[in-house]
Amino acid sequence: MRLAIFDFDGTLYGKETFPLMMDHLKNHPTYGKRYPSFLMKILPSYSLAKLKLYPTSKMQRKAMQFYINTLQGLTKEEVNEYFKEIAEKFTENFNNRVVDSFHDHVQKGDYTMLVSGAYLPLLKQATTELPFDKIIGTDIPFAHDKVDIKTPIIHVQGQRKTEAILEALEGQQIDWQNSYAYADSYSDLPVFDLVGNPIAVDPDERLENHAVSNKWTIVK
Image (cartoon, rainbow, N blue to C red):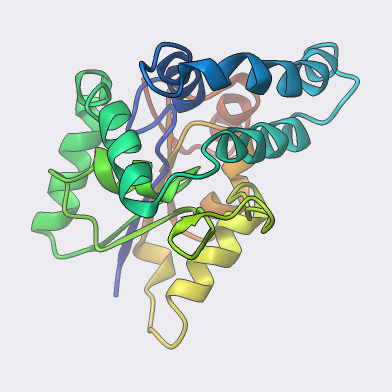
């Protein structure tokens, strides 16, 4: 089986999801009153990360947890509806080059995977028109059909992406050398290292330098 693995933020979706999610919460007619508390919780680690005094990956993980905590009390149906509202804003900023590549892989019969640190319900809502074979994202814990803030989320980022991919494909015969991976960030290097055809999409500086050194395909 040959794979085509796609990142979401900065790759399939041309921007970052978190600013859009923050804006949605801030202006939400029902949950907007929860925004100030959320903002106060993320500001310390965000400010330190900007000053390079705190690891960005830890800041992002904290922000993801605080955001879910803000949705405390919502049922699974309400959470899905909430993320559907956000997902409706995504399609206009999809990267058409990456979308075309996705459809090309589908036509070739490749097994397509969307692997992202974004919340799983959001990814599913955002890609209803793109029939991925497997979607991996940051899951939201529920208890008794309501958001469970006592159970920490497992943020799918860095090495965790590779682990999640391998877990999902356990027992399958994979043609890694002829498989593809599309991403924009140097932090996705563990995923790129799995495949024989890494594609750097609008890469950050570190990834672009690495891609040039290794003669990878770069899409801008």
